[in-house]
Length: 200
Figure 1 (spheres, rainbow, N blue to C red):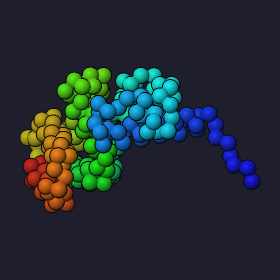
Figure 2: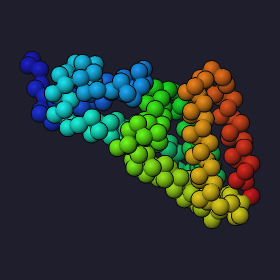
Figure 3: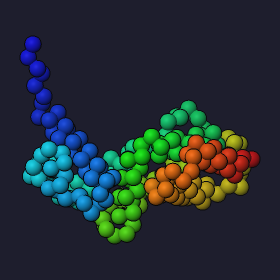
């Protein structure tokens, strides 16, 4: 039986996957500055020319990696609403930090590089990502106010900003000191604080 020949689109998708994976591995172990087209090509098993062909420029590559890193967390409880939904999403985010430590590291290193000007081409991408994350929580808080599971005087925008700030802060601390806290105990504390803060 002859092996099935892959289409050009399938080969291109496989090349892209390997290049992005190699880039994320370099960022996780050596930092953002270690990413060069040659280093990525070598790590992925390709030439620098293949990486250039796939992504055009280093900025194009870094943008693709940032989008991939940003997509790693998605809410996992679509049937929930209001306070229950928010608390569940925060718990899922904290669980993802534990199970996807490398992806979290890549995201945060890129986020810091965008903030610090090391990767200026990523700044707008991360500004929009954080704004979208805050809007997401603000909408869920507004839903909770409407359905009575969140106290009506909560400012949805301010609370969304605070929740994202807490999650980013926890993420950064875990990158610097991964063994400083029991993540399950941390998640339980955050759950309790958030539930009490939003409860009517």
